[in-house]
Length: 65
Image (spheres, rainbow, N blue to C red):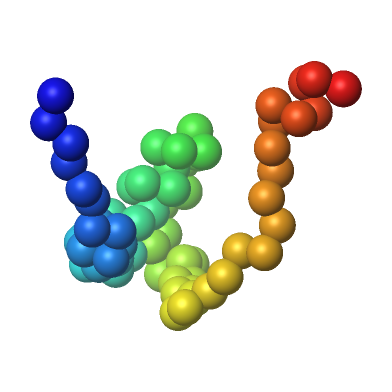
């Protein structure tokens, strides 16, 4: 079996490159949220650099209690 290693920084940069276009970003937002917004100028793009997520949710521990 072949194992593939994913470069997370590469995936992130491709995602940000594609979706820095507000029309494409709005299309993605509408698709994910089942909404029908039509003015890309209403979007505000906020990018967090080097952010750390400090909390972790573990559903398996919750179910075993």
